[in-house]
Image (cartoon, rainbow, N blue to C red; front, side, top):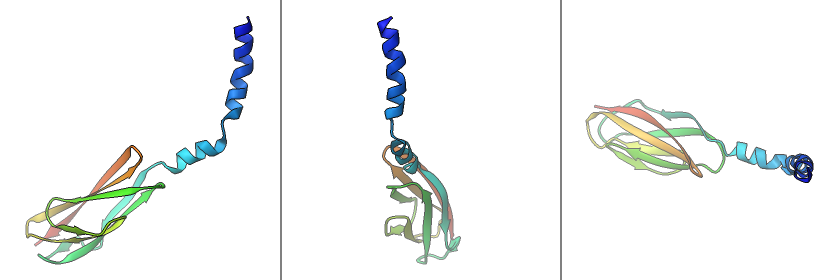
Length: 111
């Protein structure tokens, strides 16, 4: 009986002790990839285009990868330089917050 009374009294106090700020901090770190866009969708060999990642969330780190070509810069905007005339060049951006990742890919045509 004492255990039941203890639980009945303890649970409401435990729930009230949780701060709403903690909940909202978790929400502000949620990660969503809004868009990944290239200013130009086709390039000639040696030309470049700026690629921009729009991500919702706080404390986001970015990792960029290109199958073929060169990526200059960091953060949510980079410059992609076409290094070969291999038609379709995929450029991917991975957004990372703590242990959560989201990846998007944009294709640039090189001729």
